[in-house]
Length: 252
Image 1 (tube, helix red, strand yellow):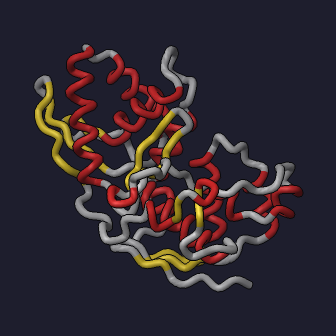
Image 2 (cartoon, one colour; image 1 turned 135 degrees about the vertical axis):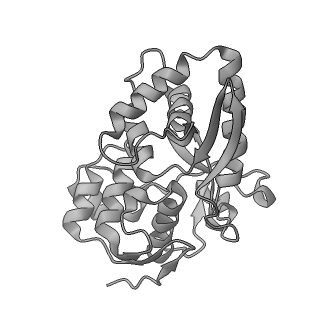
C-alpha cells in the first residue's frame, strides 16, 4: 500500500488512497482526449475523504489538478518534484502554491449595458465544455475551449450557467449567445475574461489550447518551459493500462 500525505489547501482537506485495480482498468479504458472525464473518474476513485468541499466536480480545475499531482508526487519514481516534458521541467515549475483560492468571483465591468463578473472554472463546468466539443457548428479546437470557458465562467447580470443539473444544454445556449455578439463586443468581453482569469488563478496558471486545459509555467520559471498537462493516465501502472487496452503510460 502507498501512503499519501494529507493534502491541504485553503478550501480542501483531502486524503487520497491507492487506486483499486478495477478502477485503474476502467480509467485506462477512457479515451485520452476525455481528460476532464478521466480526472473526475480518477478523483472519485482515489479520494478517501474530502472536507471543505466534498464533491470533486465542484472543485476548481486548479484544485483538481493539485489532487492529481499530489497522487503523482507519491507514486512516480522521481517524486515529489517529478519531471515533465522529457526532463525539461519539473512539477515545481508549475505549482504556485503560495497563491491559493481567493474570492469566489471577480468583477469584469459593464459591457454593452450588461454587468459582468467572472467565476472559477469547476470540474463540472470543464467537463461540460469537453462534452460539447463539436456541438457548435464552425467552432472547434482552440475556439471551442476559449468560447466554452468564457460561457462557463462569465456571468452577465448575475445569470450564471448552473453548476449542477442540465449544465450541457445551458452552457451550449450561452456559447451560442456569445458567438453571436459583434466582433468588437466579443473582443472586449474576451479581454475582460483574460484579466479576470489572472485574478482568479490559484495553485496553477490555467489556460487552454485546442486539446483542452493546460498549466502554464510559473512566471519565474517560464524560460524554456512548455505548458504542461497532468493526465491521470500517468498515475496508472503499465499493467492497468495493458488490461485496459492501452499502451504503456506516457510521462506527464
